Length: 258
Length: 248
Image 1 (tube, helix red, strand yellow):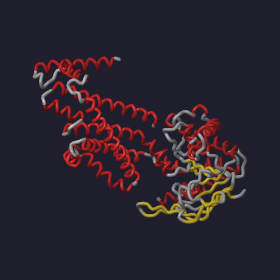
Image 2: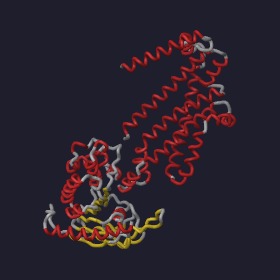
Image 3: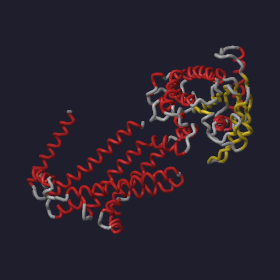
């Protein structure tokens, strides 16, 4: 696997009312094409900041991010699509029109983008809901529309910042299975931020554990197991224990800090 | 249906009470409906005031110009102040304080600057319409969910696109509400301006009739002016309803 994404020694400080906060320190990471790479760590460890750098929404103070051979200087919707924790749909647009948003910005003609968006409704499980407005959809449906909006622009890379964080647990499990199915069919490269150990273990080819603030990389776990995964298998239970012990240490540090 | 009937009954009772009270008191001062209706007829066939069409047109023209200026300046000012956080924070309270001053106190100086002709009426209508539009834009800009702006940026939207495709639709309802209030106030400004001192327009006719104790004609002129105001507000409310259906 070649490195599609290379993060080279990035750092980030934020200035706040109570002084500077160092969100990230000296983080380096590579993600290969077709990987499902998950970032996990305690709250405030800079996972979202790192994801923001990959998407060109956050400028690193030092170091750089290279995507597909080019240094990232801003959002690049031809290579990278982002799904946020909050669906962020436009309430004045129907589900279909929301899915079309990125294509519209890229100047794709109306008829053509309608075809693309309509074809996505099936795999999104929204076949009957294209003409509905976001307020008429459930939380899970809204998040699928947001994922559809990211899939529509057909980028090689999809960044997901806790996309299921706001959903109830059952919906969340189903959405995980659904996402896995989509990912395996499209072979896109996914960088995924989550707080959920289950999500990390069920979905990822690789899990990156980050430390408490300032965020650095604590450990990296490779998960070569086939999908769909038997979560009760011996190797996954062992990995879960290792993952939890890493995260637990950092979460305790983060709590002691707070 | 029942509501309409009750409303009709209330109106009928009011007209009847008006008629009886006016007859009991001085019919010259408290013009009863039975006198107003023929006066209105004479007015509409251009008997009592042949210059009615020109006056209406003049007032209408003043309103349109005042309102157009209020929209342009209100949107411009609102967006400049609303999009520049720092400047907006500095100016917001000043604007709100100015808005709270009864605008009519400015009118004498407007007459001094612009004279007794249309310009001072336009200036006053503009002044009244400008504030609600500006304040609606400021409120609307604050309403825009920053997360939506972030999403749009992530999908490659440049500032102008964020403005057109996210900010304007997100604040549309508030914006249209402000435009509606602005229209009502521009109309009031122009008519009040005419009444306070002018040589033309509906206000001048009203002053004339009132000054000569032609109270029936005066009431008829007021009714015509009222119809103009109500018509403009009906148009505005239709636009507003449309915007409401379109936004959230």
